[in-house]
Every structure is written in C-alpha cells, then in structure tokens.
Image (tube, rainbow, N blue to C red; front, side, top):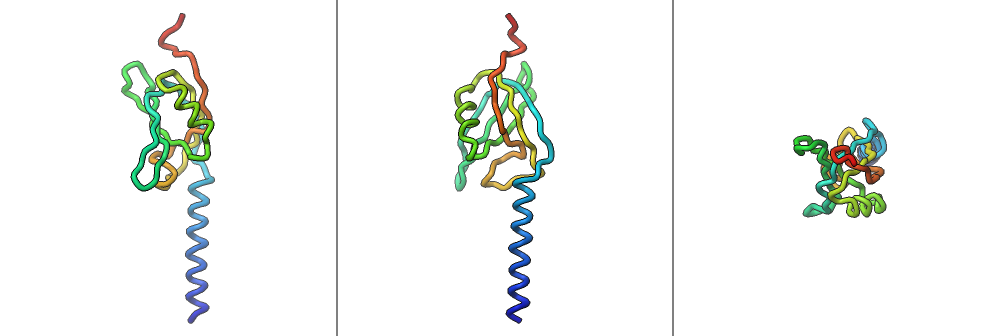
Length: 121
C-alpha cells in the first residue's frame, strides 16, 4: 500500500513539474509592438509583479497590456526611463501564466526608444 501511495504522489509531483515547465518555457508566439508607453507599475497584494501598457494609436483606443519578469532588471529600468515616450518592445506570448509571474500572457524581453510616427520633423 505504501508503494502505491508513493508512486501516486511522485506521479502527481512529476505532472505538476511538467505543467509548470510547459507554461514557463514554451511560448505560443513572439513578436514586436510599438506605441507610447503609458504605464509601468509594480503591483500586487501577495506577490508583486511588473505590469505595463502601451497605447497603440492616436486616440489610445488600442492598449497593449504586458508583464515583465522580475529577472529582467535591465528591461524594467529601461521601461521606467522611457515612461511617456514612444517605444518598440519585443515580447513572447505564453499559453497562460501563473499569478506570481504576471497578470498577462505577454512578457517583454527587450525595449528600445523609437521616434513617434505621429510627429515627424
């Protein structure tokens, strides 16, 4: 009986580990978006995550919400620096996420300042 319980518990742990690895490492898509960085914040009650928004349009009707992993310190610092400016971000989209990783499925991996196409000189 102990052997059956041990095998059952071990299989549960392995299945949970595989599920976590799938969510964390397997991406659904990768891409680039650009727009005005209108928000970057460190929010949460139990677990703080970095969340942000980019306005993709003159009226701000299309908002791209994203998360940033805590390990990406350089990306977080650049986002803070570029607040209110036009930026281009590279991201990966995951199938889903866990609450301790972020609120969205989109995770920023790189950020660069860009010139706004709305104000050409």
